[in-house]
Image (cartoon, rainbow, N blue to C red; front, side, top):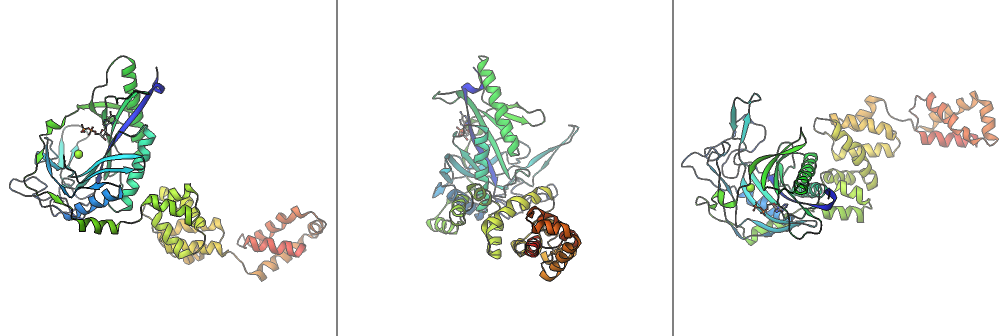
Length: 466
Ligand code: ADP
Ligand code: MG
């Protein structure tokens, strides 16, 4: 037996921080990166005698996410306490939803979403490198989260990554989450099991933590599945537990045995009334829902005649830039698509500072290239500068001296001069050796320091000699 005799099964639990201004139960900012413990409040510090007050925006965003993911929205959902002790959770319990979550039964493509519930995030423990001291930062405590739980419908690490990318794109498109894996605002735990191919019962699963990039998620699932197969092949059993992925060593390590629900002593939180989603709230959120990535993808392919590949790339985070540029430009959608997918995304990977590019600037650049004022190559150069500085396209073209000469009289003079200097080549050309066109064009371009519009040069040389 080998890995190929087994089927990998994955179910994902995603924690997505909601883009609210303030925390879920206290009126302090959720801004990332503040001084440790600067963004705290007696409620999120767990001070005795304080009472949580629900931030209404959380419910609205949860409903928005639920609708975007095709869920049923529960009209009356309940807050529960989930008890555990950890220094980053000073109350000794997490306020979450348990048996009556706000959303259920959604899907992302073919993958079923079991439930989505609202909860508060915990703080963070910060450990000194030498292991002598641990400090607690409670800025994150009380940040609103959605926990989005899939059914075990995924069948490979690649499946899992594809699902996560699609989910992330949808949450970002509806303005619920910023999709930042690195900062931890979009996090995922992966439940992984293996079973013999064709088996009807799922195997015992392990839950993997600490997966903060798509690359690690894929790697962690693959090495965990291989570990489980090896155990089973050796006649051993997989033990259900929580495991930590160590990206440096490329392995998963046991972290703790799996808790059962009863370990948490869940009960309804007496401090908070049930969450009521009225029909009017539901309708208001539904009618304000923007076009979702899947619908965009179809529209780009059908109406704008983009390839499925281009439409897929542009229907996510690039869609705003793409659509606004196309509108300001008024030309071919395919051209806008090519510049964004090629040059703009390359710059995004290459430049660490945030982009200063606007749809108006990109449209102006495309028009300058179309009009032959600059070559496509010069356009890339100009785009790089505009992307970094936000300076105007005309200004950058002028500053870099990239303007092409399209002035027919000036080019004509250069063409005449070149022909006069090369009488024998001119005669050969006229005798039928048209391959010499490049020779003349090259000489004219050189005489004009590379700034002549090559299209005009070609036309004039051919006309004069032909
Ligand atoms: P619990 O309630 O104990 O946390 P659940 O059965 O609700 O466990 O599942 C939690 C997550 O684990 C879900 O995302 C689910 O899809 C996934 N999961 C459950 N069983 C398996 C399995 N055998 N293999 C892979 N994933 C699984
Ligand atoms: Mg949870």
